[in-house]
Image (tube, rainbow, N blue to C red; front, side):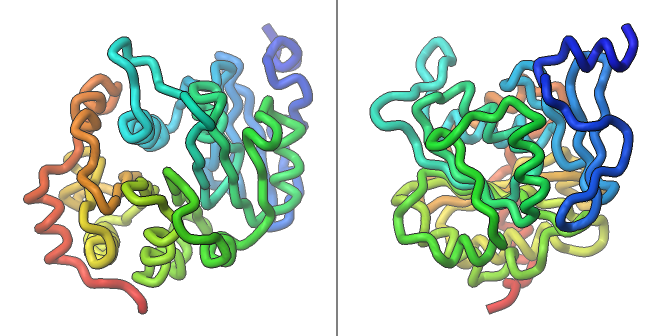
Length: 282
């Protein structure tokens, strides 16, 4: 099947032009169609999102780990089916891209309500057209700087807050400070869960600094990472977790089923990272 034929049969019926640079507000985007019908979205040369025809099939590893944590936090039944009762959970995402994770959550928990903050207006408008994203109020896109949105939200608003913002290959420094952590804790409901995508280059100590910063604000902090990432020997995405209540016990068990050898770090490892790091910003 040719690329054009694959595109015609893919669920993304209105996909933009493939394998070319598409102008967006902050630079360029690029769409690549894979053999399985999934689409890779690059933003300024950096892989940003990977959307599969099955919304719950997450290609990026760290997003699978986040979904496991969210499922455990919001609740799953004995048959491993996510619970989605009542008015549904309230989730916020700092950083949008192609909205892979919000799309998966919406498929699993249709009563949930999500808001995704994306700085790039042209990108946000484009992904609405390219991909089969749920509409408001199930999924709302807000065009704004992530920190400005975070500061503006009222107290005790969200059950889950996800940080997945990058400028190039690094998180903007204003989003990893103690002040940003305090605002994150403030907008979460009691017992709410904060998740952050941390891409720490080896030798920088960034993971330890982030753990120390979150530990200065939240009573309970965790790290999901491969062993080489946890030890700082190799660059890779890890997921930081924080809450004012103990983290769900089932996270580590469910991580064992992932295709990657990944674990929830032991409390002694997290404490060692916090001691080695420094609290960032004010």
